[in-house]
Image (cartoon, rainbow, N blue to C red; front, side, top):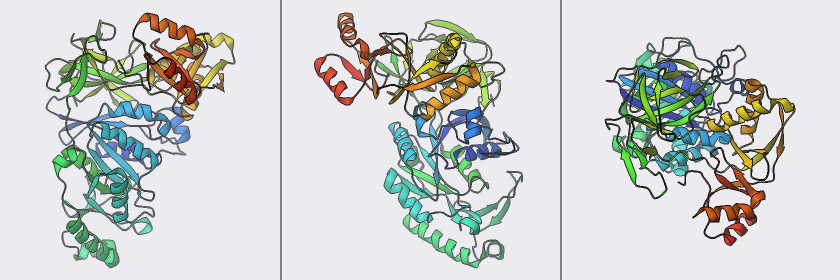
Length: 533
């Protein structure tokens, strides 16, 4: 895995909830020979999905935290990032997408494109990220495959190029026809993933094909393939890399059909590490931009995710770092740009969900974990001494707010520690009011508060009451000088709170409230996300 000759392939899975994303993640790990037995997302026997390690994920059968899994495949070092599917955790997904070069998009074939898929596609489009599409759940009743293609093209404005084609659906589903090598792969439960039964289907009239799929499905498959060849142009790798075309695979992740073909195309066509935009000191909005190429000789990287208590027995906290250039080596000293300190990294980690091992070295495109005692923040840049700051990892303005009241007043320190860590992870944003030490939690969706409540109780032993707060938004503020800042805060103190970096924010009680204060203070700048500097 540490072999420098392996070409890096860093990709994420996105989908609307319940489209089969976590099941697909498990199967990709199975085909990558990372695991020998896959776990259902919802399990009655404790055989949970490997990428869902948090207790609440196992209880609810959903993914709410981005997981990182690394494995070698076809002479490439694959880094698979399984993103949260639930819309309440879109910030975590957005940050994850800044760390990848391509995306696998899962579609429920009975429903087509859904709301969260549209939002995630918009984020992917911001960086022209190449997208591979998997039309899942053909072992159930589905939309017609041509209808699915039209649905995807019309809603997401991307050209679909089928790479496999379904043979039936629901109870009649027989698998998929590989349009590239004209074969049908048949899988059986617990069979070695590298040894499926392969049917040569170049001649659809062959006895072997007809015996397996029947004459009715053979006739439909032949007609469908002819229509695909006449109506749909072949895949152009350059159009794929530009985000204009998406190779489309039909199948059933649960039953392995179409999964290997999808992983093959990702390893074959997905790009390696790209250049990353950064700013030079003093890191203000108008400071000069620069571009860090992956072959830049010196090591650089940035933290895109922080996760505490992945192993509750050790109360650990891990910062996930994307290497952007150069070579990182174990026991190397690297420069933490925000603090200006040099830090020796003696135990860098690589991951397979909650499983981990020591990484001796890492190259551009690799994801490594740094043990964190609370020093690191999301967005932190590391270099070999260069004064750079990678850009594009903001916090978005929360829309729902809660006040936390302790049931046990003696647990104040545990509450402060838990909220600090959870906010630094990006699970929730924590603000302190200007007029009192009161803590306010801000989130995009209500499920985030459930996670905070669960984790505070489970990991920190803290029980609290969560009351609604009459804010509808937050705006980060930028002032021309200190006098303007102190005057604004003095006048609007009841609406001022400070974020985790002690930056002043204006708490919005209504859109009319915000509009009025902006009109009264035309020289003060208001921002919907924190990445304005």
